[in-house]
Image 1 (spheres, helix red, strand yellow):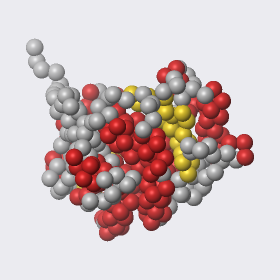
Image 2 (cartoon, one colour):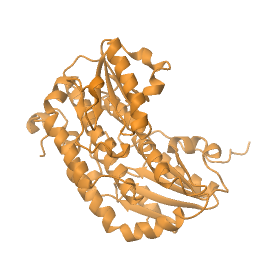
Image 3 (cartoon, helix red, strand yellow):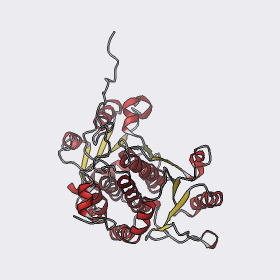
Image 4 (cartoon, helix red, strand yellow):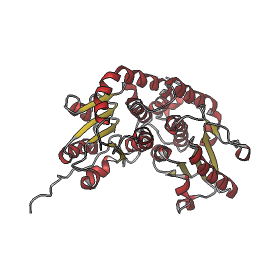
Length: 392
């Protein structure tokens, strides 16, 4: 199998971590396959998307549940920045869990809508119900489905439908492990390329992730062995969605035994900062936007000055003389002018590795971390209630 952080494959198999480790390690290569797929579908994608994006007052709703919802939160700011000059266009990241529980406040009947659904398996009850509710509620609704499973219900139901387009990613993105890793970054990048967002080349992205895995193995191992009991991940704009995903990976892979939370650097001061203690690890994802980065650096200085917890900054460039990189900081091998969306998949590889190592340290089986069965790979126990209440 593909090695990760010099971990022994036989030991990973014995400890129930084979799939998770492989699916983290394979991402630089899988991204190239995803890019090639999107390019091969370019004509069909453009034929579907261009007429929609040219329409006045189009609303794009990026949706999914759990990790898949965070994909939309990563993408929405970048999409708005690139498409926002078009009159009347709106871009919202709305979780399927919100759409299903309250469609009247999430969907607008008279507004032409493109519902972009992200789904690893396409079998989550909320993913299917959100599509049905959108069709029932919105007069003019189109669907772009980005999924990893050809046999999934979402791909099968929308594959041949009018006003719908399904982008099925390579099978390797369909994670066999419990936690979403390749599927998250694969769907994120597929959407960015499908919409033609400004990004570094796929080679630059893959090389940056591969370099991180090679250069940071020792640092990650050291951090993974630290006795921290809380993790805080901070990011601005689209990187806040990435921070939520990074925190969720730690919660999932440690079966909730290591508490993790996410916020924006500015928002963190407004109460959530009370979570800090001497056994807290803080990851700050520094924005490449020069204006936003000032606020990120303000909090970085503040946290280091106050000295509560261990602080690690992930950055694409060395800081200025006043904010020189500390020994713990991680330098991402991407251009200093790369959009924040490009930072997301590379930085997430670091967070995924950290969560895997923390899981192993706690004696948990990362491929199936929920010993109690409280959570499952495809969510269960969801009852989809009819939109109209039953007659008395």
